[in-house]
Length: 352
Image (cartoon, rainbow, N blue to C red):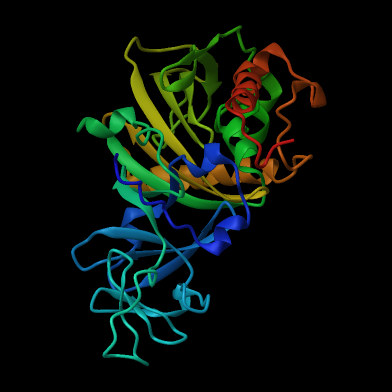
């Protein structure tokens, strides 16, 4: 008979907040890789769980529950000494594996086996730090243009939304708001694009639309008018992506070249709680000559803050996955399918 598998010990604070297994077993972005420096503890919050992020001297990233098992103090109020997290209450020290190695009040005693922190599975990819609070059911979704040297990559954000994370995703995968929310950049208010019928398929990577054509007066950081063909993807409940094929155009939206460039954007949502989230994005573009990265970031700041302002107005705050609660049109197909997809996955947290 095989020995019983050791059960993963979870903190008592795991009883708070999100209990949705679909979300707990997913990967979530909690920051940019370059913002976490060795020797510092960074507090953050995900799905109503308080966490710490810290980097060891070897460069390894760690994400733990913000909790000392001894008397429940917040490790985020402590400090790092010799690659050990030190609890601010009684000075208990935890090594990189989460094991307690020293209790200052009893320095000659070996800490009990249960004297451990609560680490989570974490890794760095695409310039972000990702964490899974449960057991990962799949790999982190791919960011297709990341792997090509032909694309300049630019991270933007964070954008703190006083709004629901799924609402933020749905806004990102919607083109019909461009002439109104992003007038002068992604559309023309007085001459809104007529969106032709498009399709949405469920594929191995999630949901994927066919191309959606729009005219954009300032379609990217180069400042030129563009005809853009968006292909939208929902990789995970809180991870989306678009690939935008672009052609230079005149100011009426008529293409003036047969050449196409590509602009891809990975859109990540850290759901702080059911009605608050943090958005972080990475754009990859192959336009030549490449624009200044700061210009790319400045344009992203405009666009995503405009999105933030409108998402924060939406009511009810939790997204309705039952379609009868809001009205849907053929131009909303990607959002409609996204809501059905969430419902079919059994998502219960942050929805109605």
